[in-house]
Length: 318
Image (cartoon, rainbow, N blue to C red; front, top):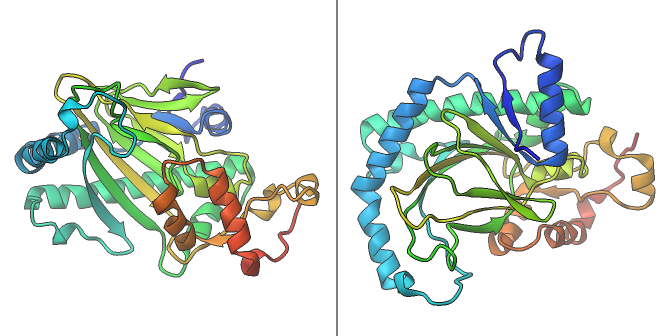
């Protein structure tokens, strides 16, 4: 049972069918995969890593230590379930960027992260089109489904997971599924910690240099009517070392996008049994998710079914 690592180098050549088959298998059976030779230059990713780690050391490390001390988290003796051992900030890219509004970021880092966002957006949209190809959906179906009236929502959560004295008692990040669409992660290649739940067991996502980890969010589970599923994942803090860097970029629907299963993916039998995912406005789902992030996703889907009867309408089936 090896975590899927997919080389995209020959995507536009004779290897395209086998690459698409690997992506299909990963989406159906893992909810996660890792891509190499994805078109983002290694030297560029090295610079992003360098400046991200410099920013943490300069602007965030001491603040994190003070927050941890003030909460008494260095000396816990029992499991802590209401806090994560992480230091984070959020960059909004679309529909409107907030990068210029963050005074702690150097000008170099700001311009670098704007370029990082454009490269990740391009890769996210390529991957969505590959998913369409595998699902026999029209090209750009998923991009259009995410569009809303102002385009998609896109942002990057920049995280550091410092060494933790009690990693068995405090998670770096508690187990959850991601609420949004498709998530692209550039992570530390020297420090592990990300795990996903596969067949009842926690599996490490291998840290590979210059790779991008891709995972399926709740919205893609809805649109595919469960053919692709979002998967529980977590971050385990490490007891020593330099800490772990993580830049997770979330390519999500626009706030007013109406999300529902693609009609061609709803089989007649499922429709007759009412085994259809709900139809809802993305912003409504996010409001619900905010308070229930670390709980099971199924009740969220059920709540959306109950809340949006007025949006329901018949969904065509194949």
